[in-house]
Amino acid sequence: MGLAVLAAVAVWFFAIRDSELTPGPLGSEDVSSVGVPQRVGQPVAFGLPQVFNRGDKDAILESISIVGLPAGLELIDARINGPERKINSAYDFRWPSPDYTDLRPVKGHRVAPLDSPTGERGAELVFAFRADEPGRYTFKAVQVDYRVGDTRHRVRIRNGLSACFTAPGSGRAPRCPAPTGL
Image 1 (cartoon, helix red, strand yellow):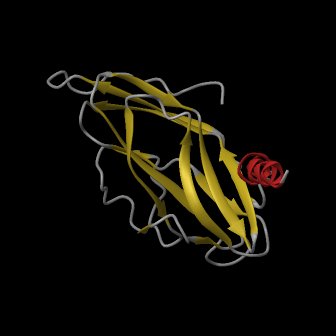
Image 2 (image 1 turned 120 degrees about the vertical axis):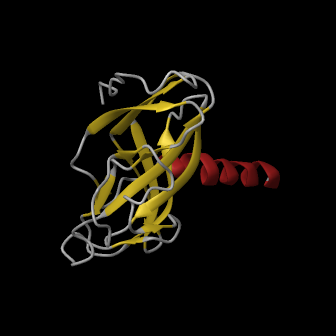
């Protein structure tokens, strides 16, 4: 009997509890996507998604990830471009890129409330990818896991990427349509 109760608690803790996570105060009003051509083996940086804290306490980031990372597209880095960044850069053909001027680790990064001086710029979510095979690799959302105080939250941001990788010697793809249906 005791093992059955312990098993039920473990199922709730690891499965059901996570499904009860709310989006919380972090979010984005932007729903957009971009298509980026690149050569096989070369990194591409994606910084289109941004989050803003509509709450009144700091949101502390735990992780950022790709929803539905396609097979063959390798995530090589994930960072935050903080509030001191010079510009928002949707993408770059280099990694690391000098366009991302306030790169910080994700875990522990604090996103201040929107109505505070450092919170009005939010946080730019930056991902770097590479593919070893030619093809069009697409995803439509990113996910942010974070907490406010002791409460955990998870929010999905509908910003997508199509990265069209071409074979060595063929140059970049002339056209790479952005994902649709976000």
